[in-house]
Image (cartoon, rainbow, N blue to C red; front, side, top):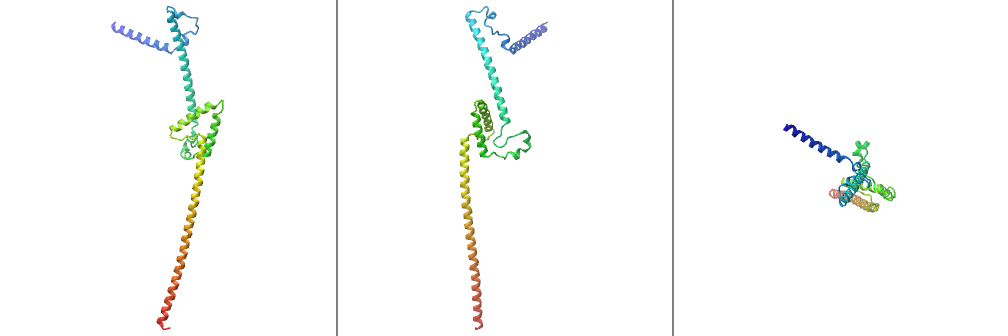
Amino acid sequence: KKEKLDLDVDMIHRHGEFSDKLINLIPARFYLSDDDTEKKWFQGLSKAEKADAKRETVENIKKAKRDRKKIDSAAEELNVVEEAVKDLTYGYVKIEDNDAGNWKKNKKKRVSKAKELEMAMKLRDLKKDPEKGDVVAKKNSWQAAIKRAAGIKVRDDPKRLKQRIHKGKKRREKNAEKWKERVEVQKKVREEKQQKRSENITERIQQNKMRKIAKREKKLLRSGY
């Protein structure tokens, strides 16, 4: 009998916990009335207690609405992140599912600075759009954050891109000038070597000629002529 009694108590306890969990799953609107004229559950309370209870109920309802807004906002941000990941370019080429087999070949195909500037200016114009500006800005911020997390440089500032293009142009002009000077120096050195070689050949020919003359004169002196 004692074991049966303990079993019944345990079962009642578990049923009570299960009932509490079910009650917690029921939204407040099903058992809290929005009608201010309904005061049945206020019976037996003082005016101060009624005011506190009513204030607490209002706060609970407001908190539930705020929590729902937070959930909706988080879901919206999650959708933005998913779209950003789908359109992620990583500063090179857009990664598509059908390009998975060619990623080694595509990863070296970098976007030119002019193309980066064009995309940045287009993005800047889209951000100014009164209807889509906020969505575009949020999406771009997520893309930039994901790229930076992947260790990829983000270049979406038109002003800085113009400066980079200008510096690159100056650097190319300077390198071209240096290359021209180098070619001229190499040409001059090559001409000097050619001139020196020609002079050496002429000098050797003259020396051979003089040796032959000296040899012939010596031979003539020996013969008594």
